[in-house]
Structures are given as C-alpha cells and as structure tokens.
Length: 229
Image (spheres, rainbow, N blue to C red):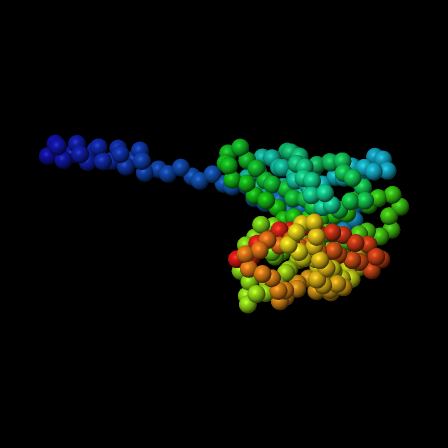
C-alpha cells in the first residue's frame, strides 16, 4: 500500500512539473505604410541640392514589435539600402528625379520571426518636374532565374505597370538569347501580358519591358534571365 501511495505521489509531482506549458512568444505584426503615398510623386521632401532631397517615410505601429528595418530600392539602378528605426518613421536622403520602392520589416528581440509590410513605390521629383516617367515594369513571369516549361513550344510573359501621373500608354517587349542583344518582339502593346511567344527548349533567354507614358517618358524594367526545359 505504501508503495502505491509513493508511486502516486511521484506521478503527481512529475505531472505538476511538466504539465504546465510555456506560452508561445507572439510574433511581430506587419506594419502598414502611410507615406509617401503609393504610386505617387513625393512632393513633401526637403530639398538638399539639385540632385538630392530628404524624404520622410512613415508607417503605423505594429503589435509585438520592438524595432523596424526600412528597405528602400532605387528602381533605376536596383541599388538597395536599409535603415533601422525604433519609431514609426525614418528620414533618408535620396536622389531626385528617381523612382523608389520601399517596405518595412517588423522585428522583436524575443523571437527570430519577422513580418514584412507590403511594398510601395513613389517618385522623388527633380528640379521643376511637371511630369514623371513611368515606374519600371514589375516583372511577374518569367522571373529572374526561373525555369519554364513551354506549352507546344510557346510561353507567356506577364508584368505590372504603374505611373505617378496615371498616364501609361503602352509597352515594348524585348527577347533574346544574349544579354547583349535582345530583339523587339512586340511594340506599342497595351496589355500587361503577352501570350504564345515561340521559344526553343533547353535555352537561356533574356527579356525586358520598356514602358511609355502619354508624354513620351519611358522606363526600362532591366533584363531578366530565364531558362526553358
């Protein structure tokens, strides 16, 4: 009888010590971007010179977050820079007459998990600018390094276009097997997709999109490489 009581006591102690589970650590929430407004020209920057201005990036507070990392990309050069912040804003010096994209990553010292906001774009105007070039087309498919399986020897291309003036007109699409020599395969195309483009199997291709607006301004998506299987 004593042995049974002892076993019951031991089991009770083990249950009491191991039964209480630690509450999971809450992960940071994604911030919501506020300013500069998405797909618009930022006219609130502080002009520093003919070539640079200081832009204030603003977002909302995020739950379970101690700090933020702001990532901003020059859409012409693809150069990326980051800046840490403990508040919900950051000031950064940027080139004028240049389009940018940006997003905010929420972080906490209590967990390795992070949360990324949506990506916004804005145009930092230059001296006396009255119209703004389109943003470089955002490539959707095929993306850089993607392997594509042609359907009956044909594939489709897809991209996104945007402009601070909302006056996009059309696109030129280029394709080739050399990064130094891509050929215009479709001009003055008004859609953001191009279907049934003939390609060869087991070949590396390069493609890009040139965007036009109503005032004759243009932008270049840059070359994207993909392979066919």
